[in-house]
Image (cartoon, rainbow, N blue to C red; front, side):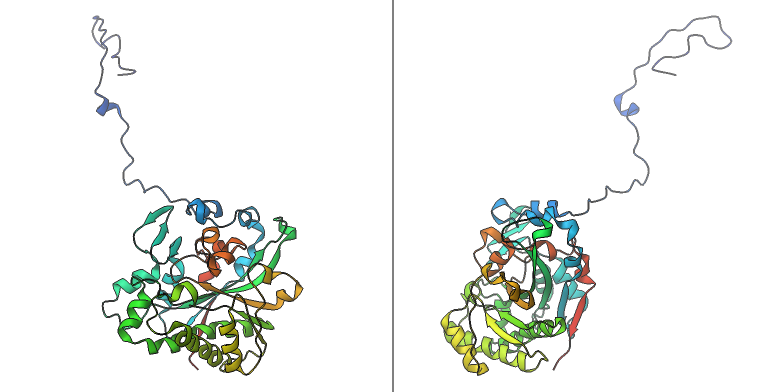
Length: 347
């Protein structure tokens, strides 16, 4: 049959047959190809990455406009981790990030607010039935563009930043809070020292003259710290800085940004040298002398660098809203992260 009709004449007969056949729709619909592959997922782009954020927390638009010219920045990344950690777990923590995670209460995944974290850090903690060890802590260095007046590629300036993950004590849902409250807060000193070792190792590796520290784990992260935060955590932090610097080959200077007088005085006393605070982001990035400094961002255990960006009033948020760190910290956009890894050996 052709077009719903039989031939006008049956072979071997003089009879004329005119009959229109209407087939059921189920018989005329095309059959699917056997074993057809599932539709492929489109590769993430800077534009679709930004669309994962609610408008309140979006990173800046201008890195998207200059993304094709930032290959040197993408390739600059260095992922520092402890040699004793499982490298696959490290890569899981680096790859699987919440879009936004503020205090384990404001969490965003793929443009939607969700009730719990889906970060690699959270998932590894949930899977570990023993809870005898935290998932890997790591740091991510990058040379990021920053902009003060113009967003054209030729007008951008570049700064060295290392995103260092602070331990989170701002919610009882935090793996860090659950671990240290069970196994003892005294263990925090050693963990902080390892975290600070990433900083001085990176500065030495890159030949940078000055490290500009921030108060990693201070501020909002410390609300559930059970002891006298103003003194106990401060003492742990400054001792960690001293131990990490003394055990490294870094011989350059040390400065602070966004620090209060208590931290300035305590660090100066322990290091037996004057340490000055140079201001806040983005003002500290201005000037040619900033080109040879390593700026330490206080990062979140779960989110992309920059976290809530313009809707986040922490240091991480201010770094995110004035640079390209959010985009550069996404493994799907920047696979160099999993290629440029540096294992930190024990002292």
